[in-house]
Amino acid sequence: METVLSLKNKKDDFEVIYDVLPSVELDDRQREIMKKVQQVDERISSNQKKIDEINSDIDRLTNNADGLDYTVAVGSGVLTGIIDSLWVGEFSMERGKAWSNKKVNEFVMKIAKSQGYDGERLDGAIRHLEDNFKIPSDNVWKGEGVGISAKSHHLDDLAHHPTPLGLLCSILTQFTETGYFQNKDGDFIPIEIVDGKWIGKDVPSKLFAGTINWFFHLVSDMSGSNKTAGVGMGIPGPVVSMLKELSLIPGLNQTGLAKKMKEVFVDYKFDLRSELAVAHELGRQAFPVLLNEVLVRVFYFVRRVIVELKEKKSLKKVEWKKTLPWRNRTITRMLTIATGTFTAIDLADAAIRSVVKSGGAAPAFLTNFVLRVNFVGFGRFAIAIGSDVGMECKRNKQKKERMRLIGEQLHLTNTKVYYKQAEMWIAAESAHTTIEEAYSMIEETTAFFVESMEEINANVKNIGRYRGGIKENNSGLLEEMEDILDWG
Image 1 (cartoon, rainbow, N blue to C red):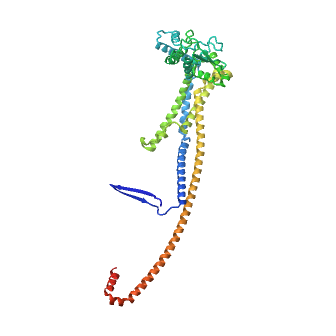
Image 2 (image 1 turned 180 degrees about the vertical axis):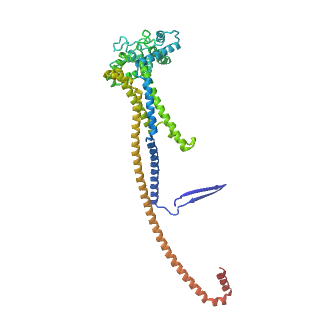
Image 3 (image 1 turned 30 degrees about the horizontal axis):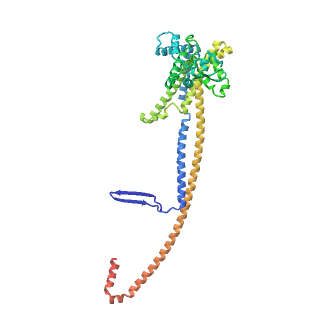
């Protein structure tokens, strides 16, 4: 018989163990059913946990915004749209280039002075850095006839790229004494360096030259050469550099990407300063977009905190997770409306101003319209729509998964009922056997009782028959028997 529960009590050196045994011995079928029921219960419990998690996720992915939320979202979009119209204005590359040229020139002067330059002229600062921090691959392309020119060599020489690959190629050049280039046709061209003047003599010096010289040399090239300081061709920016590096990949090197990058860099003079100019203008556009975002998120947070305080009556009981203005469908929908309103006002403003400025002429209108559009706001609106739609898709997927789990729970519950029914029939069968055994025992007990009564009656009669002989031969026996009958 299996032990249901075992208890142990120990005091000093005396130990007592209690074993609690089942009142009925279970057969193999009942044990198997109990095992199966336990497995079903575990599955039901596991599924319920998943359902609870899915319910929480569905609630997060459900839009619970009300009229006030929508009103604030629209109001925020209108306010920031007006700010964009009055303060940001149109995209101006000239304004951006003026800003970036000034910042780059100031940076070059600052770096040059940190390295010992004591003058005040930009060309002198560039010459100082060029003379003290050369890189081996700077002019090795000359005379090679590989399609690299003075205007394009900053782009074609990978060691002139302000990127991780540019740094790697600079260090690699120190150890291989080879410059690494790619021309406009997409051909990868290693060129041996004959003059090893700027190659390190040992590992530390190679690493130093490959990193420190590389950095300061790129700084010297940011504002053009010392002969064209401030206006000449600089180095390619990170975006153009990485696109050029992508054109090294087999397959992409045959797509004309390398040629297009040369046109952008040489013909349109789109260098690092141009990229900074674009970034500056996009930064101006980003201000009202960020303001719109902040206003909506702050309102969401403050309102939810107030609602929680009214419900919980205590700051300690506030469920802060419900107040956070991110990763839920409600704030995403509010931002979609706010950014959509902002974009609508921006596009309307751009259209009206372009019509006024161009007089309705199609080419001029289109040019002016594009320059007035806030691309940061438009991009944020697209992201908001994508997030909103993505959450809806995920919500539908979670609802389907919940339905599947609920269906599985029903099947598991039915299975458990079937096992319980089987257990009941086994118990009924056992009860039937027990009842039959009880009836048989009752019959045997009854027969034994009848026989015992008959024998007792016979013995009592025999005592009366032998009374005279007992009294004559053993008179004390009768007295003892009377005492027994009286007092037991």
